[in-house]
Image 1 (cartoon, rainbow, N blue to C red):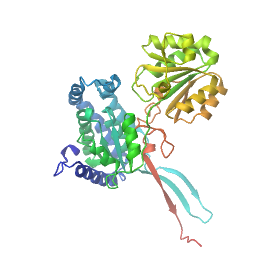
Image 2 (image 1 turned 60 degrees about the horizontal axis):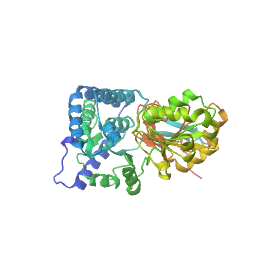
Image 3 (image 1 turned 30 degrees about the vertical axis):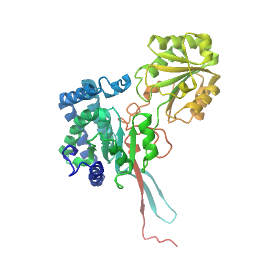
Image 4 (image 1 turned 45 degrees about the horizontal axis):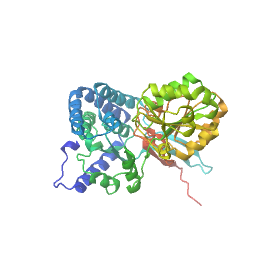
Length: 428
């Protein structure tokens, strides 16, 4: 249990090296753990979270008091805040992960060569995963559980603002590991808010860390991508778009647009830009703007939108590149699906985009010509979530094109190896 692990000095490098050694040793044991054992640990963790509800809420209250008066964005405080409902959701998430199929050992493909060699491609754990995150204490449970299910050890470095909450949650995870007879160092949390700990993780801890997953603001993710000496699963920001075509059902479009922007404004799947077909100016534009305004959303409007609704705040070039994470949205008129594709391909962060349309040709072009990780038809961008995809949660949304893309769930936290069976063959 990391809470009990100390070093003989206050040196952060020595602390992190020790954490790395423990993680690597634990990963070797986890790779051999049965599905039943891992699931027993996950369910025990869920029980511990519910039993420790009051202690977790008290730790969270301490974190919230510490950020009072710092002028932080409401979205940041929202992500930091825990409740009885969110703790119950964390516990339920762990049970759902336990119910998922164990990917470790799964045969992805198998074939036989003309010389009689039988070849299998089989899933294996990645090894040790480092997760660096800000303000979201629930990530402690989500990331710890997903990594465990995929047979990986994990090193968690939460934000200093959520350290008390994360440590309280971590104690529940360690209790589950202990009850299932798994190594307690399989899930470790960095016990310091010193930023040097992040730098140490980015070096790979002398080969201990196999993959880094950052979850946080643009500056954190940019630093990780720039400095990491190990592979990274990351997205810089969720600059998500919704395109409303002239063929869209208006009532459906209003529901989806308001939900995509306003359900939770501080998540990476929240819509930041609304694009409206120029052929729908007379039918869709005003009702959509009125629905957003009635929901309390500030609108940054293009020149074409201002001609119809002159009282709005004009959008600048920076607005098309801004992830607001707040009740603000940029709105532009585009020349049909071609204009929408051109705008999205210019400004998108390749995270999530949605098209609202009844014309199948429009949908086909949207799906074929936009290269974001998640594309939705007639559905809210807020579904960009591993839990909503049936993955039992996610460790993050990856917008790169190597290995993992979109929600990073249990399956994406594995690699593979080849097993080759022969009967005495030698190569001529």
